[in-house]
Image 1 (cartoon, rainbow, N blue to C red):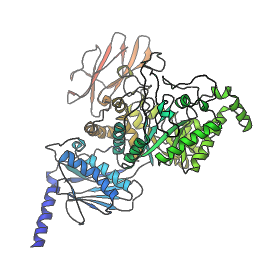
Image 2 (image 1 turned 60 degrees about the vertical axis):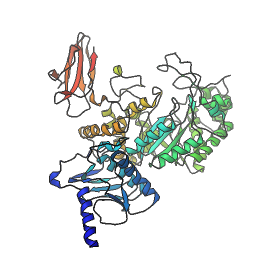
Image 3 (image 1 turned 180 degrees about the vertical axis):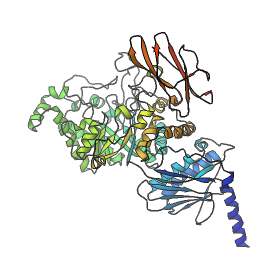
Image 4 (image 1 turned 180 degrees about the horizontal axis):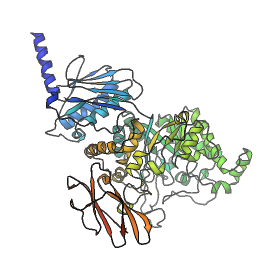
Length: 612
């Protein structure tokens, strides 16, 4: 009788958790980033409160990982999963340690069960992120969703990262952001399998990190007396003090929160340039060429930089000692970019030091500065990474390079067998326009379009296979001169960061059409995660190209797949009956192009306009 009862329970669970193949309409597998390999099978697995979870390793860490799944299902679906120690039970999600490499996982969805194979907890975590994307997008909603079938398409996924370093940067100096927003930022990163948060904490315009030995850095250095309005050259200011900093307790909170999502926080402490906020607090760190120093109130590059003297190195070493206590990251970002040599050229101490050390010029002095700090940082068991300019005058022995000026710095460093993160501004800077600048708020430059970011290959073709092995990853950079709010950050970062995340994670061949199809479905997830992304994906981009004094050649494109572009030349609203765009065409000065994207004769985005 007991065996008969057990059979009936198992049969009931099977009927709840699976469906017959003939009753299933095939579901698309729209994953971002795309896995290394996906096979779609027939049928689906259905989640209900009868489904169990089996853990091969019954550890607190695995329970924490599975909570990312169970909490979502409880909140959005009202489904409360429980744990079991019974193997081979229908209607179960199995987590099995199969000895796979770091971050890798295999996911098998069958009508009767789901099996997640992993080798490290990070692999199990990324498998959960994929499983969540296989569920209906409503699973990401903040409240209970009714009338949803919580089904997962049957499939087999083999997945592992292309690069170990998959980064996203945020500048919190030019504008300051709350701890709550940083947690949300990290959540969205982790959902896209981005595993490095590059946190920019010191700048000319504000020092944002509490250093207990130097309290003025936050008492005074966090503040600028006002902020420029518009671009750095406008000359108009708001007259309002601006500040903000993170206490050491807040930093620990962020680091721990990120670690639970397998995100390593890499702090950036700028040197020897971008140091004006620190020098305003402690003028003895400068070359002493001015009577007064104050935190910068506009954007740009400033000549006031750290002077390479013993007081400066004691200060920076003390700062680093507290940084090491807060951040377990093996890599420490030391900036190294945009360091004018004006002060050093006029400084008697710097000139004497160049002569004493047998250096050729101020560029070699910068290399000497970086190398000295590297020795100290290495002595504490950490490594440095810096922007391209740390190559000037010779690269410090163990340094990694974050290549932002283009590919050249990355190529040079890789050829010298130094590790490289590719973050070239023409491709991966998220502060650049992503649509027609005439219709967008102020940004740094561009435009740098979604397609540009997607199609960029971060491994330069000129590198040999050995040299290419030194490209350790990619990073999307968010500089916030023109992003004063969290909403603006999200608008500029997403969905373009989806393209960077995919290049960092996926080794699958590039497929723009496939990416846009997957991304359109993915936007529904971003909606429910309350990410205020840019919706230019659905809007035609009209570009005018030089022709004659009296004419321009017009090209029109749209990111949304399967869209028909229709346009008019008199500025009137395009309709389903308007001319369909197929090839570039010519307009004269009297004509105004209006374009919109349609599917099945229904408009799917905004109308865009362009005049000669």
